[in-house]
Length: 286
Image (tube, rainbow, N blue to C red; front, side):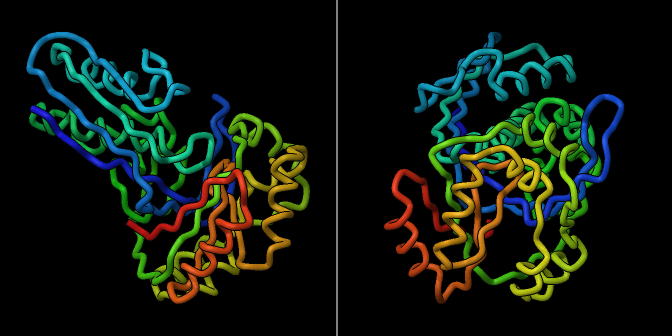
């Protein structure tokens, strides 16, 4: 049996850090939204005993036990007690990595849903969330894959209404940033600016783009901009273009802009011409 699925990215529309647990994990309050920039996964369930074989189109992506897909595979069979099966998986990566777009967690979340479905849904959604939150912080979101307000370490999800009519421009610079560095630098951040999550959610629900844009902040972006010269120069360059407002997604390094549909193709074309060496995508909410 062969199953072909699409595994979409996300953006964070506002991100506040609310505290830190004794185990080092940070408590968050943020809005996460799925977008239609997708990886493609082909899964062959052989029905035979065995293990997981991963192939991909990217030489820089590990295909062994360090891959998030393999961690999901092992955790699923350990949790359920079902004898592990031979599965051949091909991953076509389109979502940039080290970008704050959730590509790896998306792959893990969608693969977990397919494993669970193939075996007759032995795990509930709550069980899958609890099992996967330690594998990838954003996997619980992709198990739901709807606009959500997210709290805790990423495992507390509240589905929210999103009626915003706009396109999304995503720009990935030719460098990544470290999520670990972002959280470490947060302790150095003074005079932080908070996202107004309530007003963002109201803007999404009521299709008021200006209300959304005027209330976006990202504590991880602010923390990275303290010391990361590459990111600071890139952000300054984006701002100097004066084409639209740009915001970092998650822990970066990708930036996004929410643009009215009537202007989005023109802005996209301009950015493609100006941002040599960057990946630029015109997307929509999925």
